[in-house]
Each structure stands twice: as structure tokens, then as C-alpha cells.
Amino acid sequence: MTQHTPQPEDVFAWIDGAERAREQAGLVRTLRPRPASSSLLDLASNDYLGLSRHPETVRGACEAAERWGAGATGSRLVTGTTELHTELERELADFAGFEAALVLSSGYAANLAVVTALSERGTLVVSDAGNHASIVDGCRLSRAEVAVTPHSDPEPVRKTLAAHGGRALLVTDSVFSVDGDAAPLAEYAAACRAEGAALVVDDAHGLGVLGEGGRGALHAAGLAGAPGVVATMTLSKSLGSQGGAVLGPAKVIRHLVNTARAFIFDTGLAPAAAGAALAGLRLLRREPERAARVREVAAELYERLTASGLTAARPDAAVVSVRAPSASAALRWAADCREAGLSVGCFRPPSVPDGISRLRLTARADLTGDEIVRAVGTVLRTAPAGATDR
Image (cartoon, rainbow, N blue to C red):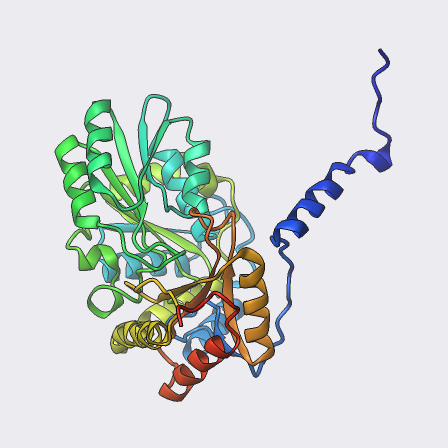
């Protein structure tokens, strides 16, 4: 039998079928460039504290770029570490209550770095079923034995750790990005202590929102600085900048510097992003009430939406998730909101582990009462059939 050799024009022909399947399932994703300024009311971004355009944050970025240049110029181990990077690391660790910190180019890279560097063949990595894709990918790259346990259920975690008996770590989000629910960190930490396992927590949605003055979910749970605990976080949400960080015992940070490929072989975070994050962090220290305000806004959004008959998950932080009848309905709903002047997120498979599509509204500390009322009214007016129970 003669085997057909694809011609150059046929090499990617398989993509056509994949595109048709996405279109039929209502799962096509597109890029939508946003203008520098917009009349849309923003409940789609992760700018929880309203710092991305704050004059101090912007000034921090500008001054850093003017002093240190537009780019980091190399990996952190070569030319990509500036005094600004180390200053940001010291202040992040101090603020969140950890011994040391390491800044990376993104929160995604931070999770890849931690999971792969703290595990190897024979290590057990226990991962909550609701974890972010960056944790999932870290598990895939780790070469460790990976066990995925039911979402936010400590008992299967304990049993899985007990059955392994060797080196292990549990990795979980602190606040899950789909429904905005918080992980049972105290119970997870107890299971890890009982079985001698490490606890790794992605606090991307907790920093700036939870804990005293926004110090994070681990600080709120009394776990910040604990010897067996490591945190990852992003600088692109509450701090209004870009980048990621790992916080934990100093020896863990030293280990990452020497072994984490996502750190060693990646260009350092641009000075402008480091400067903006540092300015945002210092602003949060001075104005800790921003953390409480964003939680108040999320709670009010939830109460108003559910009182009107929509099904929403009760928020533990800043994310308010509203269920849609289908993926295509969620996409149309988000588009209708946009046409009515409101920007909201739209989560569809494979981004949602349970297959249920949602609108995702993110609370911001700088939203006014009138803007909250306007946002809820827009969501209700544009709701598709089957979205409400009334």
C-alpha cells in the first residue's frame, strides 16, 4: 500500500476540522484588542484594587523604565536581576509574612517553577481538581506521580497522602478562578502536617483581597511563613502590574534559583513591571481598606444578582460567577452585555472543569454604588432564556 505523503499545503489541513468542531460547540475564542480608553464598565479584568491605572503605579513603571531600561536584557541569573527586583522580593516577602521571595515573569511561570522543582520521579503531587491550568501543566511536566483529588475535599487528600508514605506535596489554588470559592486551607495544611507533606498554594486571587490589609489567603489562615508552606502569586491582579512570585522558606527559594527551569531559562521580569508592582504594593500598605472594599463589592454583586433569580456562586474573594444555560448562551450573553456597555468575562469548556459555562464578574475596589447597580441591571436585561429561575 502506498502511503500518502502530505503536501506542504495539506500539513495543517487537520486544523480545519478542529475549527469546525469548535464553531459547532460554541467554543471559538478570538482576540479583541481594547483601546487605551473605553466607555465600557469593566467587570472583566483582574484589576481588583483598581491600581493598573493609578497614577502611583503608572509612575512606578515609568521611572523604572527610565532608570533600568525597557527590558531586563537577560535571564535573572545573567543580567536580568536589578536592584529593583530584589527590593520587590524583600517587600513582597515582608508584606505576605514569608522568609523570602523570588520574582518570575508570570504567575504561570511561578507555578511551573515550584511544582517541577519541588518534585521528581517518585514524588507524589496531590492536586485539587479545580486548580488553575498552570498548576495542571506543572504537574504534567514534573515527572512525579500525580493524584487529582475532588475539589476542596480534605479527606481524599489525607487518604492519598497517607497511602503514599514518601515525599509528597499538595498543590491548590487559594481561591479558585471559576467560581471564586476558597480552598479549605486549614484542613489541607493539617493533612500535610500529619503526613509530612509540603503545601503549595497559588494565592493569585487572594493577594490584595484576603487577609489583614490584603496580605493574602495564607496570612488569613495563619499559615504565612509556616516551614512546610510555599505560596505562589501573580503581580498582575491586585497589584495592577505583571509578573509572578514564589514565597516561602529561604532554602526553598535558593533551591528554585538553582533548579527551576521556568526561572533559569526565562528572561527576567521587565523593570517597568517590577516598578509598577512595587508601587502598587506600597500603595496597598498605605491603603489597606482597599482589600475590604473589594470584598464588599463582590458580596453586593452576588446579593443583587441572586435576589433577581440568577444562579451565582457565593464569592469568597473578588470573583462572582453566574451560571449560563449553555456555552453558546454564555458567549451571546457576554456579547450582549458588551453592546450594552458592560465588559464581563465568559468561561466555557475547557476552562470550566464541570462543563458548565458561566459569566464571570470581577469586583473592583474602585466601583461606585451606581456602577454596581448599573452592572447588575445590564446582566439581568441581557440574560438569555433559562438563566433565571423566575
